Image (tube, rainbow, N blue to C red):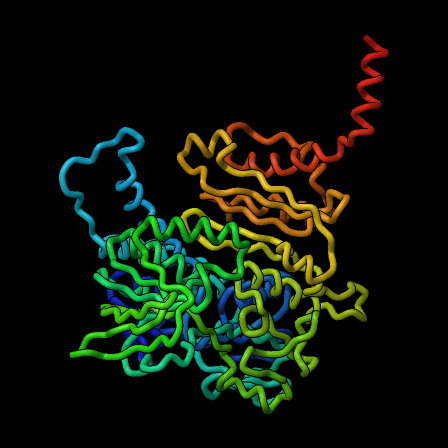
Length: 516
């Protein structure tokens, strides 16, 4: 693999500036002295991403003796190469797009606008460094966690080695996450390319950017870099973008990113990468046409591999495969003393899922069932997610196709933002809310929102599902006016209208006639 800007030094993040120096001082301090173990730990956590951090912090707060091991960067993907930097980049790109669209709001920007991609990326690094204090080694030490910076490897079902130091434990949790792993595209291994782990190290805007994969990462970065001014070519093997999402929703996103200048090459066949006179070329067939595209950088937005190497899982009887560590619904591995949480074992690779799984692990590892507290299970998790394009897509529960596959009959109610006053006034009326309920009831089984702040809005549906509340409760809840979130209540009102049957109307008509 030839990722761009490679480094084997875990205490080096490019570029080497004051912001990344602050980040490193927090999440992988160069002069960090590991503690000396003193007795057996109730819990050893290996991996300091979201799942590991939450597990360690909560367990320590409950009074457990906890060790936390991280070989690379505390904060994991989310802080360092995922949620945090990507949203910083997306926000900057949104500001650039707002200048372009300002005239419709009566704002005329005279002359040429000075655009500075390097400054936008520096802002992201500054804010990432600021946020990193929350995940720092110093903070977790202050929380009562013994923080070990180094390579952890299980040596038995009750011991783990960290660079020559043996830690004894009663229970352990594997939270080592996953990493970018490019698919076997011919020629890709002959060029340097970007992944989510390296794209945020850029300081110069690539004039031509090829993006492979129109999933969440690919769409978010393709749109953002097009807004910055890159010529972006987005290659997707399937039709359209975000193929796993509601078709109507993904079509809105496709129109949006195309309007930002992204060239979409979907239904891509025979993709290969080659060097021509030292320049990178993407060769692909799309909808019957052949394209040979010179690019300055290539972003691979597909492919993940679990971080299982070097952990010694074979020696302690923990089953795993190329998808990760295998766990049951209690997040317990094949070794009953070892648990796992987060991307290493979950098909839902989201920060908030890792957080939720950490809560389950704590209850099951520290308070086993014989103590009378019962066990926590992943079976009851209701997991929302969002893709932060413009507009955003957010979803929770079942899609209509999922309900059909499960034999669940549903009624579907959709309300468009083009009929929501605040969305019209904001100039953000492209989108909708769609909710699926069990047929003949108001019980929510799934929902999708397409809106500028869909990720913020989906929680109302999620809370209703978690609390066993239906559309009737939403319809009866007062929502502030005017907000875009009013679209959620309007879907509930659409359901409520269906409860007024023709026989009810006839009865009421007679009643009102009699009482006149």
